[in-house]
Length: 371
Image 1 (cartoon, one colour):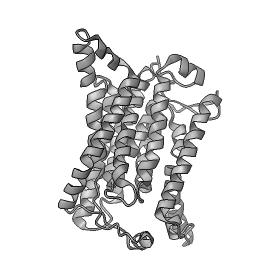
Image 2 (cartoon, one colour; image 1 turned 45 degrees about the vertical axis):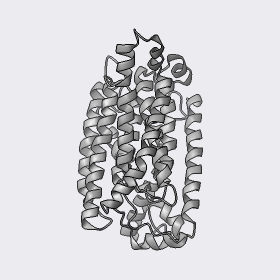
Image 3 (cartoon, helix red, strand yellow; image 1 turned 180 degrees about the vertical axis):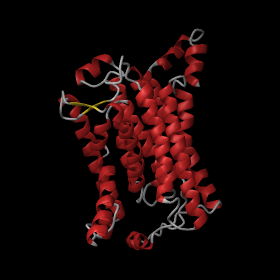
């Protein structure tokens, strides 16, 4: 909105406004705008959700462990993901090029999965328990949205090529010349990336500041990678795909996620005043998965999002072990609850997971020069 106003309408009369054509300038202002919106609207959101009696329901076993900090989380306002979505949408409308189809694709991702998360949270609240939609219902709706995104990327993705080979080729971190061409298998692969990341972030969202803190590292990494990919010289030097849309789409959008996430963390940090709920965790994960597909860094997502991967694997391994052998591998899944039940304070678990997420971000960035 502001981009089109400043550049396409007023720039001729006021040349100073041409500064807003710069991706870096708009990225900074988009981040600041999202941060400001989430900070300003946060108290209203907390108050309104309390007024509507929209609170979190906690499993008894988890509640007992969390009470080692003498704080009951039951009843804490949830569905705070609305705050993140609103901050991102307003900031993107102000600072991004809305004629870019991939901006609209990311907006679709956030709205579709945010709507699904909202439906799931409302079901939990109406039933007064920690379970919302049935697992198959949630997976089905996630898959439908992810399939639509995957089909679009397969046929109209950001890689310009005479055939589909480049668009469906995957790069492997640490291996400079090794690539995998998936062909039509790219569609189920992309679907799995989006659905898997969405659920992994959802599983990570169980402690104050844990999921949003780890999301900040991933979104920040992709914002930097998108900016690098948009510059021919930098992309060539790092041997990554040159994507002219990378800076406009991924850098600005992911930087906006960082701004909105930081503002949300202000209210979600321990002791939390607000939880994001599935309304926040599902669209955050799906958007990160879609961003990774857009900049062709699907496998790098596994590294920089290693916390999310570990959380998801802990659940899968725990379920398989219990069903096959009747034994639990860890005390409780997802993984962060294992450490909580092992006697760690919640704040210690969260901070140490953040530290690991930061290390994983550095490892992910280090692969660029190696490739």
